[in-house]
Length: 263
Image (cartoon, rainbow, N blue to C red; front, side, top):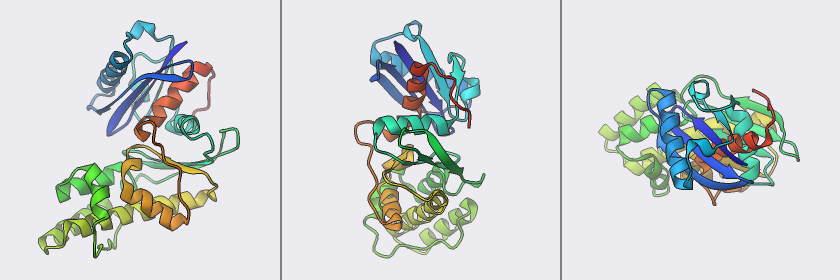
């Protein structure tokens, strides 16, 4: 059976095409203002990569903040349900999943069979989300990818007294005007983000193994910071882009043909 998962997020949209538990094609694009346009574009690219067309898909599931606007899916499920399933497929031993999306941060504790035992999510504030990093990277004048690597070269990381995105942005501008090294500012940004994530995750009574999904999982500065605060090394998602974990989970749930649970 050929199935598909489409994850329309606030910053990026992802799609995965699978057959018999194997990925045939996948794609990631920057989200457009209209969720259905994002969905159609990213699914088109995933199908192109798989050498297939839309009519070849037998069943599909949508997820992400824009899931209700995806025109071609058979049903929709929450990001929590899909990221948990995708993480379990990517890291079979995982018991705790951290997913940092564009507009929220979620953590899930799984039972040995991969079912969600407990989950927590942040408040509506942008701090602790991908949006926070996007804003800070833009102010500093670097890419999101560079933000993580730059923090490794910091000699005197700055400390942000306020986690609020608006106030932190003002602090970044002030530090730049004062001639503070960009690397030190980047390290401070990552540290502030890390603290927000770990504070949330600690509400779960973390169990090993732990992995992180979403685009922020590619920020090595934040990964290292989380590991330092947790006191152990997390499992890395290496074979595929951690951004597509939700779309993978959606495709797997499509293959199951189960109703799933909207969380």
